[in-house]
Length: 331
Length: 303
Image (cartoon, rainbow over all chains, first blue to last red):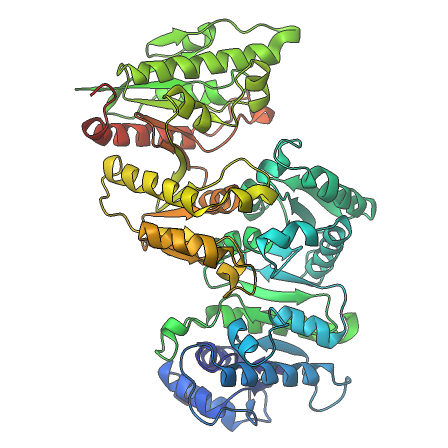
C-alpha cells in the first residue's frame, strides 16, 4: 500500500495527486491511501478532467488500484491559493498520519509500504506553528529518528544528492564537514545500488568556482571535500572529484557518472530542473521508510485551474512502487 | 563599412589554436578576420595573422605561454580601442601562465576592463534561448554575500540593459534577478539577503525577482526573460552549461568594443590530438559578428 499526502490544500497538490493516481493506479496491484481532503480531491479531479477515473479508483477502495481517502483533518471550507494557517496545520497532520502508517509493523493491515508527499508550503507550516521544520525531509528524519539522511533527486538522466539542503547560502560553509560529505557519498551510493546501479560512479562537486582552482578561489575543496572522497575511495566506492560544478552535471548526463554529490541546494537543483523539466523525483535517503515526492512546489499561481502537470507526481509514485517491495527487507 | 574581427588563439599549449583553425576553415560570413598569436601558429591560418613572438621550449615554457597569450590580448584590445577592429574573440587562456608572465588579472573580463581604461564591465554567458550575467565572478563562495550589494547588482543590471539594447537589439529588456538562498529564502526562513539586498536591487532595475535559482533559468529559457542576473559564478555557469550543449559564449558587457570567447578552458588533456570541438568558438565568432554589426552604430570608440 502506498500512502500519498495531498499537500497544501490551496496549492496544486490535490490536482497532481488525483491526476497522478488515476494514471498510476490502472492495472496496479498496489492500493493507495490518500491523506487529504476528499472534497478538495473531487474538485481537483474535475478540474483535471479525470473525475470519472478518480471516482472509479475511490469506488474500489479495497481492491488493487483502489484508493482510500482519509480526510478527518480536512478544513471546513475550500482553502485560498496562498499560505494559510489552516492549510499548514492540515497538510502537516496528513504527513504525520502517513509517517505513522509507514512506521507500523510489517503485516499490519494499515501499514504503508512507501509515502509519496504532495507539495506543502513552508510558510503555511510556519504559520501553523511548525516553523522548526524547513521541509518534509527534515520532518521525516525527525519522526523516524534518523540521524543520517539526505535529499536526493532522481530523474531519467541525472541523479543528484545534496550534502546540505535547506540552509541559507551563508550557512553552507559551516554545515559542510568532511564527515557530512562522506556520509552523503555513502548514502547516495547505497541509494543507487537500490535503484539498480551495482557499483555507481560517484562524482563529487566542489564548493567554489572551478572547484577552488588549486586554492586560489577558496580552500574547502582541497581541505574538506577531497579528504571525504579519499575516504570513500578507501571503502571501495568509485568516488571522484571535487569537480567544478558547472561542467560535472553535463558529464553525468552524458553517462560518465551515475550520481553527482552537490554541496548545496541550488547547485544540485538547477541542473536537475533544467534537464528533467517535470520528470524529477525527490527521494529521501537514509530513512527506515521509502519517501518520494514531486520536485515542484505548491504553484499557487495556477492552483485550481486544471493546468498543473502531474508528471513529476506520477514519477514519484512510480519510484515509490519500484522501491517499496524491497523496502521491507533492505531498510 | 565591413567588419574586421581579431581572434586571439589563447594559450598556445591548449586547444585554442586548433579550434581557431577549425572555425577559419569555414569562416562565418559577415566579417574579415585577423588572428593574433605565436608567429608559427598564426602562419598556419588562411587569414592575415599578427605574430606576437616565439614560444620557448623547456624550463621557461609556462612564462612564455603566458607572455604570448597576454601580448595577443593586449594588442587586440589596442586595435579595438583604436577602431582598427570592431570586435575581438579570445581563445582560452590559462591563469597560471598569465600570472607567471606578469598579467595578474582574475580573467579576461577584468583585464579588458583595465585595458579599456577602467570601465565598468560585466560577464555574460549566452546560449540558444538563455543569457546569464554574473554579478560576482571568480571569488570563493564564502565571500559572495560580502560582495553582493544592492549597488553592485544595480550596476551590473544597468550594464546588462544597456548592452541588450545596443548590441542585442532588445530595448526595454525583461530582466530577472536570481535568488541567492534556496527557494529565494522562503520568506526569510532560509536567509534574509533575498529580501534585504536582492529585492530592492530588482525593484530599482525594474527586474523580476529575486526568483528561486532552480526555476528562474527554466523560465528564462522559455522566453519569460531576456537575461538573468546570477548572484555568483556556479549558479549562472551551471545553468548555462546545462542548456548550451557545448555552444555557450562568454560576452564582456560594458566595453567600448565587442568581446566574446568560447565558454570552455584550455583543455590541455586533449590538446594537440585534433579532437577538440570548435562549436563554442564558432558560436563566439558568429555572435561577435552579430553584436559588432549592431554595436558599431551605438558605441564606436573614437566617436
